[in-house]
Image (cartoon, rainbow, N blue to C red):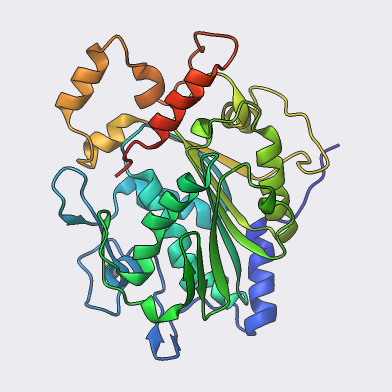
Length: 330
Ligand SMILES: [Zn+2]
């Protein structure tokens, strides 16, 4: 018989009530800093005291360079994480999901996680520190507003930053954000984790990545932390594929001590059409990719897991995956 447990949402609300005495996530003024009620208001905004995006700044459009409001996809993802907490997202490349995911955790860093008493956000990418640092390079300007190629940030939260290294941000509200490669031994047994984002899971360049998932997930299941995993598919192999199938009930997952039968995961696919609708992809690029025999269109743009050409993942393929990882997402 499957164990039935309280949802992470119920637990978070209970904990919130215990800690704040109100359970309210209303905007409040802490240390003269106005905190937003929502990540994105979905309208033109009412000046500086609006949603997180209007207060912190918009991502630059990858084709025009102009600051652009969140896409429906990014908006949807933020609502899914808020509602389900454990979300596995299969996505077309170049539809802005990494940017949207980083917004979710930046918003939570200044609001709900701080209100829960602080804790850690783990940003996870690739299999080398430089991958992790490059993800942090995209995250940091959301809060600091420092000059960067990705986001036109206002820097409204820069005074919250107490300590800063290339892979770490410590905020004065008790939240700290650390970036890790997915194979780092230091991801094991983190004491108080509130949120985990694992970017481009299927391109981590690790042949057996299930232990990496188990190590990360053990942190999330202890504290009922948010866990968002996103990737473009990369063959019928690895944890990204297995988890996608298991959540949909298409394969049976083998439980382990670190990863007992997972209830409560939510699986969502965002194919390229959503990128077209949002103007992040253009039809010309899509037409060209469709006709290119070297491009696995179904896999890169249609969220399909296709069969890898070789049974064994070679060193060359891993290098190719790493090159792919470096692709610009937005
Ligand atoms: Zn707004």
